[in-house]
Image (cartoon, rainbow, N blue to C red; front, side, top):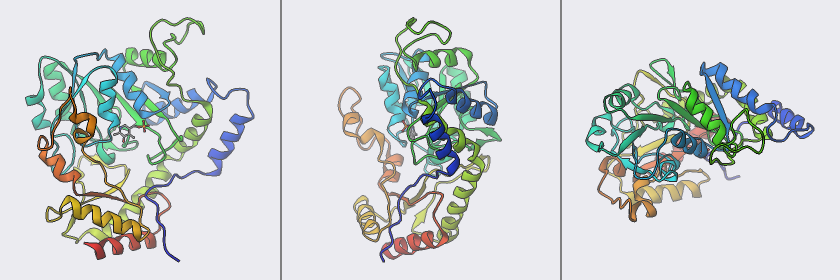
Length: 372
Ligand SMILES: *Cc1c(COP(=O)(O)O)cnc(C)c1O
């Protein structure tokens, strides 16, 4: 029998299923008690003042920009090596994503390049904790303080990761987590804003709920808002996913360990460097082919891996090369961020989820090696 190893898979237990069934039998499918209960799991676990659940990581990012007052013409500096939602969220408010290139080893925004990109219109920095590793946040926060910029940390890939012993998500003024099924924990779709800032928290609670003040009448809308609410079925899943966080992270560490053991002495591949002061929370398992390989050869390897039943993906394509980022007004071009481009042409995300066995990883690595 041919093996089929999927790229990603969720990890749902009977506890999540029972809680969902309990919600379905209850009176409240939305705006019920499980939303604050899910938020409290974050408050307790991370030791943060406010956690605001919403219907996706993307909407969480959008609400924070709005709460920070980012608007038309404002520039936000971020990385082109990320999932596209991070920089798109700036554009929802009419802002302009300004990219700077990454560090070739850590694959994170390179703080040494940020100041050269600051203009009189720069209002904020959007570091992304890429692949469950913190961005270089001390240097980023120092630049923000010096130039009076806001800092939003996109931690959608980094629940459970730490930086100098502090939780990712709490390293800027606000952080956002995402719960799509390939993330560390899932609610199907969902997101969470975390912050110690009372004003950001107050505004995000209002924006997710049609602009209502949290204490006001149902039909009193103090400001323009959205429907970015999470529902109670999603929160029911999230409560138990969050309670299982340690178990989930341990499973992911174990699978990553299988890969690392087998790829340690492979000169044709390299992995993201995790700085000593960062604890990774494994999100995906991405390998980078050496510079001897072309972008075309990478695609051939991916095709053949898939033909052998190994789910894999280009991860990520450079954001600035997406078609609408190359059109006016952004007008980004190939050649502008060469370190990112060289990386994006050579990455392959391999199957990575909690249920992979050592034999599965063995098969993936043997198949990959045979194609190099
Ligand atoms: C997943 C992800 C998001 C968006 O999360 P959704 O919940 O899918 O909207 C944002 N930024 C990064 C870096 C992500 O990986």
